[in-house]
Image 1 (tube, rainbow over the protein chains, first blue to last red):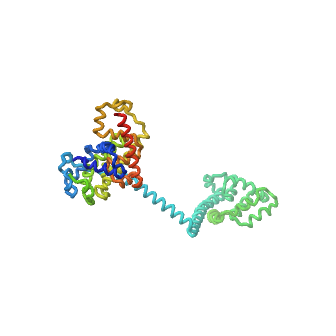
Image 2 (spheres, each protein chain N blue to C red):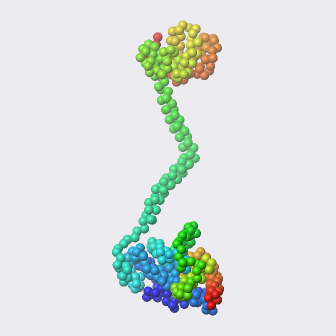
Image 3 (tube, chains in turn cyan, orange):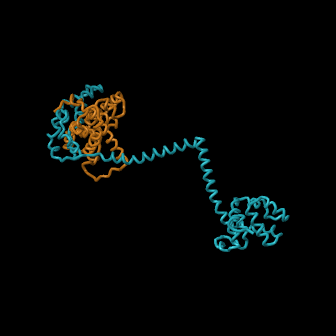
Length: 261
Length: 184
């Protein structure tokens, strides 16, 4: 099958020259004919092209009937085996893009939902109340162990079995850790508190001094500077606020568990 | 053999893609090869195979029959040619020395006669033209595309393509006359 008959080439060249207004350019015709002969050679199909043409052997469409060279008449096509060419690159691209698409949609929904929720005042109030309740819950749980430590100093002097569990030298100053809750401040507060209590006797100060502080009653605190009458640096307002800390349940435990004289 | 004036307008909608592919290859592969040769692409035979391999997956969405296939095939060929030149600009050409490819040597009379028989003399004339001139002449003369199809491929208006074609023919005429005077 020849690609371009001579008459067809001349017709095309005449048309091109007529469109350019160069019908009388006879010197251009041989050059254009020579240029057109570049496409006269038909390349032989490669193995992949032959594999794609293989489907024509069983096809009986109208195009096949109109083309004498197509179909089973071609020995090159008939000799090749059946081969199915599948474009795997497109499938790979689709699989690669699917997780990215899902992640992108999920991220966009999360950002949009977060922005909408942040813009709503009711949601903000709800979140604030929820955080407040959670903080209150954890705060109450963190204060619960303190009564256990406060119960220890009282019976620690009597029983002596719980002294091993105390992290502070409660034997030297048994009253102070329960009042403050922290060992470091307990020692410091114990020294301060002992000074007003020194007006009484040593044991009496320890017993009468421990129970009012554990009870946390404000009148007992006010009595301390009044009774002592000595302006000590330890009786500063921050120290006065120490008994009002959540030592409220401690008297019940101490009163219920250990007999206080 | 089919009449090219009527067969190119056969409606191929719903036809077997492999049938249309076979017909398109047998009808246009030579023109694609000539177009790539006229554009100076390295290894035009292999690029022609690549063009048709890229054409086959697009057969499902093809409309317009063989004329549509022709326009699509040369659009792919044009894109491959542009890719070739972009790639060659980025990478230096490394090839062993071959005496017959040395541009400083003059061809013998036998080589000139053989090259004119193969159309390579016209390709040598095209090399002296500008890129647009070569493109419009290759698409119009070698590929036998209409003005509208060439305008679609080159991204220009049909009027601009006609003007470009006229200037290209005038430039080619001047080159041919100069070459003829030099050889005579």
